[in-house]
Length: 265
Image (cartoon, rainbow, N blue to C red):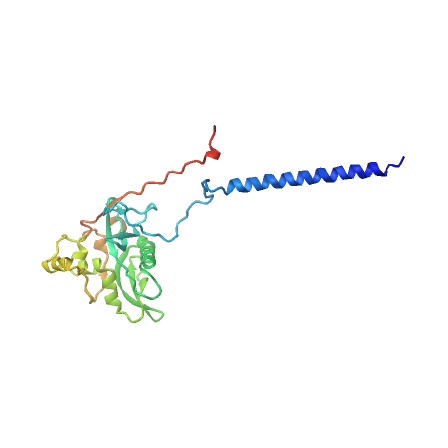
């Protein structure tokens, strides 16, 4: 009797068995991939949010006039929607339920929209704040007009905003930072009710009735704006003009539910 057919049969059985094992492994891997990408699953990130992302201000859905507090602990400048406009708000540490508008950057051109400019101004002011913000003025950097600030630690003027070509730097500063410039000059308009005594004159009230905002097209002051009265003492300011701010609300942390596939039964 020849042994060749028996050897051939054994090899054939091994091939069939190996093929079945390979198919089984592929089916298991495919099932696992489908389970991971099922539309009803909740994807839990493995890396925490380390900040630095662009903040998108969202209007209050309930129509309230409160401003959400910054999500990051210790943050004092953040971009929020106030009166329907992207606004750089200051959140003093000693007034946890109050916020004060510093800048309202509109669409000024130069390739930046109001939201992006608002976030960038807030980011720069926040980065300079630990050094003790002192004055806001204008300057020139690499041939471009800028709005900049000096600090107690760094006397040189650091850029807050680059003025688009063709625009007057002082007029731009006093338009974007109108709350500060008008209050610093001792004048009062409807746009700066959050600072000082909170009163407005008859002309501003008439302007509001006619639908005209209390904004000025010319520069209010030619000198630097003293920032100390608009900062709390914890930020090396005097806080004397931090009166009558906008009410804030604390952001509630989102509740992360555990997917059913991970729950114990």
